[in-house]
Length: 247
Image 1 (cartoon, helix red, strand yellow):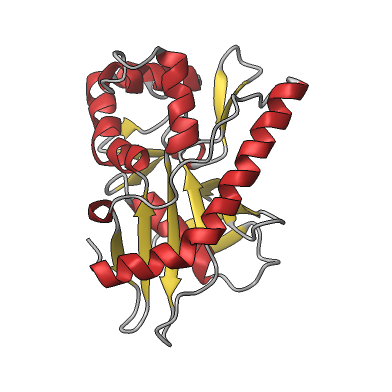
Image 2: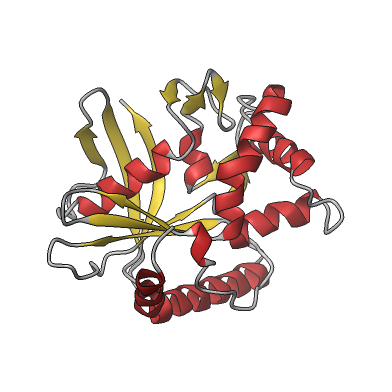
């Protein structure tokens, strides 16, 4: 957990950026619904822009540089508990090539049923499950770059009579596994130490990359060569994950 002073500083730092992100998200959802696009989503009122302090933590990068992890409750709880519970209880619903199977497994362990059906749960994850990452530079100041990692942005039909996670962590998780168990709808060909390893690695790579032409971003961590594709929102300047895998 970060200190109260750090929390208040980050809260003030993120305030206007996140409100603008939410405003654009809501406007985009309204347009999508009116046009009945493949990304049609219900319009949402602006939601809260800073999670509770016990969920936030930092990771030391160098002696004077650290990365802050600001996960919203739905994101934190899914990675910290529900994803592993779903994998252990319903492993046959992972790696099927169908993102809907993964949602089914997550819904079964989510305790969400008294609140809403599986479609409402899927929408809840789209709206609420995301995490912000930012870095404090060597000079002690917060770097203006912000990386937002959504659990996923959409679920789209594929040409194999299934569906795919579009954007976000679950899209990338298709290529990864944990203790031999697949983390999403794909083959899970690369093993992770834990479910937080990938989001922390992605955030560090994207936030420390100063070459905007380096997209896809490729680097070697000493054992594996990574390929990371990201998107920079032209209006907010916030970084988003498109996908990632090991070459």
